[in-house]
Length: 409
Image 1 (tube, one colour):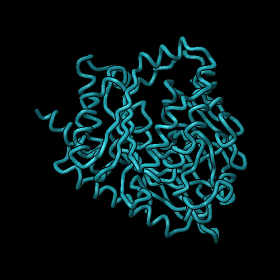
Image 2 (cartoon, helix red, strand yellow):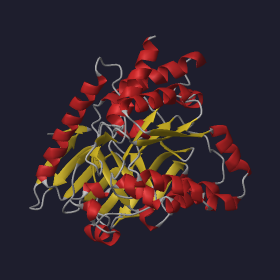
Image 3 (spheres, helix red, strand yellow):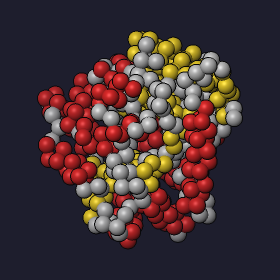
Image 4 (cartoon, one colour):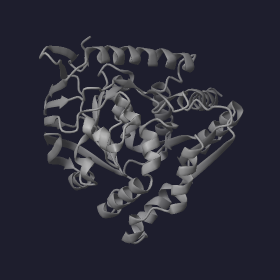
């Protein structure tokens, strides 16, 4: 009974806070099989809240694996036109999009890297308009998660098998504040606290950031009109939504050509059904010029060669080491959670919302302002309890932003 009540609260939080569904709105849910227990409750909550139509796009991981194993290479270079049309319709009608993650982090281990990267490029090119709507917050969207057997096995291999999924449910409920008496009020308070940090950073008008930690000495220049934001966004109709749940970050955009030095990962990156571990990226004038990784080097190299923008950064995000997910000391092998336990950066596209008036600018104008463009956007974790970050102002004044992994102001 308690679990069912928590699941109901999770569904309600997703619909009313994460997506903030409005009367008469369309909702598209993308979810793997095995998540039916949660999806059904979300669909019900959406209709009760006023959604006009809810479409669930199911996919099966075993079939996905079989597809990658047996389909010809040419298949992965083409994205179905009917799926493009469906995404376009959602955008045109001001619908909301929800992604539910329960993926096996090792799903595509051993699969041809050509197939993986070709499909990502085909999908990115075909859905350019849809991703533009996501990047500019034209429509409401969110990503949440629920456990699956293989994911729970990866996170809790030390537990008896029967205890793994319940253990992961418990950690997810804690991360999204479902374990609290009033999750909706708790989220409002949490977003307010993040907004205070973002507002303070915006007032400082930082010109550069300097990251220092073991394996990291990185300088990041920020565009002149950059904005620090939180996980709370506003769509083109003025409706507030939360794009990631959980979220612990305050983030902005780097200047495309203003990144220099080197940075090392502090958590594995679960990417395209594979895990990339212990990697270091070296930057010159914004571009990644050297890559080393103990695990997954070839895939990482292919990622940064996806297109021209994939070898530059698109996001700078600050997350204190002393935060709920980090304090759990749990490695989720899922970026939705791991990025909210650590300072992180993103390879690829920048969010135009992080620039004053950025949504209204053309691609050429955004690039002139220093924003990066790419069909990929992949977060990777760099934070630790030993990381220090300084902000450099226009007059050369240095101010402490992070000390020993936590906020210094």
